[in-house]
Length: 251
Ligand SMILES: [Zn+2]
Image (cartoon, rainbow, N blue to C red; front, side):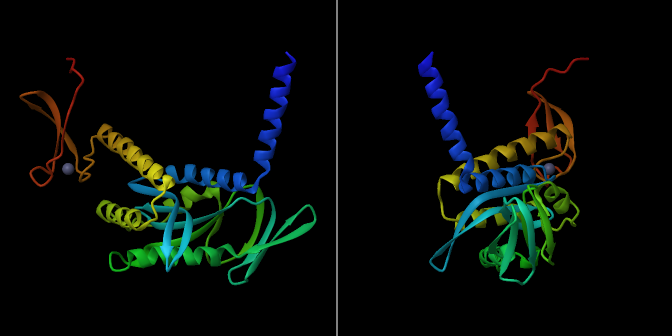
């Protein structure tokens, strides 16, 4: 009995130590933001924690959301307390427990990230569709006065969804491929890519359920062929998408 209690105490202490490290706080903030990005509707690719080589310096970007509403370069801050900052000041302030801590203006930090992404995509797309957003986790109170959007993580999806649709599926695919090809390959990017593929498969299944063609967004029509029922695209012969319907039809 005693040995279990000792093991329990040791595990608890280790967990508390882990919860208190800044790295863990940063990571969990990024996870919260990644979850919010997942609920943006429409065709999209989300790249979390992606790295690029910028003139010999590696640049790590928290999130890139490639959506029908544009490309969003997101810097996540998981701070508590009161946050004060202006667009152009070099440092921002965090007031916590009557103490003031200074940190680098996240707008400046994310400006560099946004420029790196613009550099990769120059010549392929109009780079004015690339936007910078700073997201703070709702543990703090924001007192910021800026032109660049500074929002809480729970406002992120609706913020993006309120913008106009400016990118189509082909452009989103092309942008994703370019960014993935130019990024520094590590465990994270590979894991991320697998998740994107999984999300894409789910997204395709949802479209098919709504009888929408996942290839061209045309209407799917139930047809009968030699092997039974299948879905064909109403834009045939321009679109050759087909999917067989496995369930047996009951009359
Ligand atoms: Zn189609």
